[in-house]
Image (cartoon, rainbow, N blue to C red):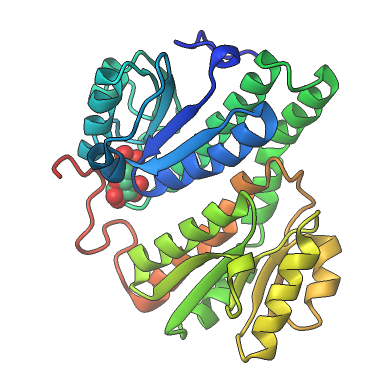
Length: 320
Ligand code: G6P
């Protein structure tokens, strides 16, 4: 995998700062997991509105990645200026090529998701996750943390994303069914671990944005109670399954997104299990984003709220 010329050499960095707002921040949060995990590069992931007033110490010759669909968000732009004044080289990941952020950054990577009309970010979010996954592989190779064989395996996992995404979208009727139960809930908790933790935050954000149901994303290890979960099989499966079982034992109504291997174990106590394709854990956040966003869409349709233009929200926040 070869990416366009970067404005910094990932091999010479000792730290990387990832900054964004809203869903773009949650994509950056996933990026932190994959860049740290694969490239062994320590990362900070922060929301722009916090970074800009925190006055963080910035390493000499350091680098930052900004993530933004519009490339116009006021707080992210302010963070860009602060980072540049602090001597950081800034790469932005944007969807709008002619945006202020793309032009003001040292370099821009385009998500090429096409115009996104709905206020709640969906395809731009998926594309941001994909670009960050590519960067994680690229950084790992340049930092000599990855064999050619591993690079090939992860690249194949990314190439399989479109067909897996189509298979997940093929389960839309099943997810709509699940959404009818979610629509009745007063509170919904999304549980997941590792890079799926930020995806739980995204699921909760979407449900709040589109249907005004109280929702929270939670790192499963922190949780004793909750009705919706991402729990694919893998090294952390047993731990997350045990959190969910505890939740069910305490009266939580558990709905789980998992794979074939996880479905058997979870169906013993989960009220609903949606079986997703067997996905390489590296690509899992990109694909799990779909079934966590879809229920928010269906719940909004069921409740009659405006899916494209939720009240009190703007597509692009250009004032503080
Ligand atoms: C607003 C939108 C969100 C978006 C966020 C960041 O809050 O409603 O969907 O994630 O801004 O926007 P950006 O254009 O910087 O990605």
